[in-house]
Image 1 (cartoon, rainbow, N blue to C red):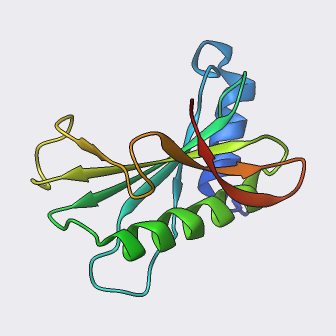
Image 2 (cartoon, rainbow, N blue to C red; image 1 turned 180 degrees about the vertical axis):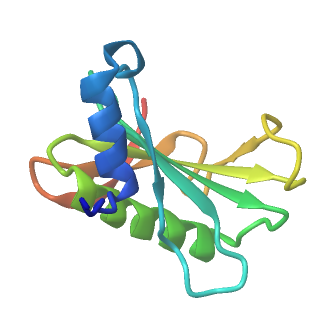
Amino acid sequence: MRRLRRFTPWAAALLAALHFPSQAADPRVALYCARGVADYPDAELTLNTRGSHVVDVTFVEFRPSRVRADWSLRDCLSTAAKLDGSRDIVARLWYRSDRYVRGVEEMLYPHGTSATLVYKAAHKTVVVEKSP
């Protein structure tokens, strides 16, 4: 009898992308990051086929402080870079007031409305990028 091996979520997404090209556009991978406290966020990495990857961090029924938001984004960027650090990764922060109602998220800006936290693959660092 053959033993089945367990795949991590990102490996399963990559396998699905190889076997189902129509779904290969932008696979999403659940991230387990920013844990260790009671109000941890939901996080997912979108592996884009072009451009930067995107990490979406969503706090549900808990609006984080600026320090907590920054720590969560940085931790999730670090986790995402371990999965695929070959491209830049943009981090976005969201707040949802109801656990059971999806699609009604509010974007939060812990670094200001014109700033984004980005993992730079070329330098393997996380920087705050200001848009003009």
